[in-house]
Length: 132
Image (cartoon, rainbow, N blue to C red):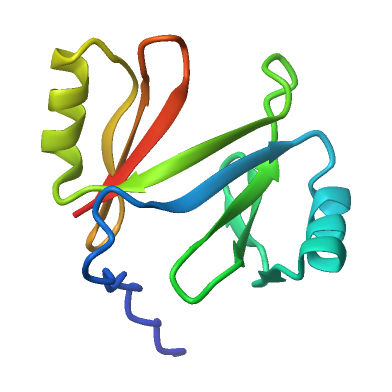
């Protein structure tokens, strides 16, 4: 019987709280966007990850920052959402809501050591929160 790989654990880089460390790109044509970003911007892509919504293409544009690319919801169209590193994603989401943001996606653990949330800040801007 084949061995199962252990679950990936994300290791946080210290000193990045408040920094945009991940950008989520939603594209009408992820393959074309991926090829363009690799050629023009020099971004390095990993093999795509299967998700319930389709393939998710992780990329890096520096030693500490990167993001993911996926197909957009046709009803919403293309988008870009920055994710900001926070010390505690659940606490940051609560604070954001108290300060006037609307919760779009409540804090959700996406892998060991990483919880993400999505809020709509005053003025309608989408901001992702990412941390333990």
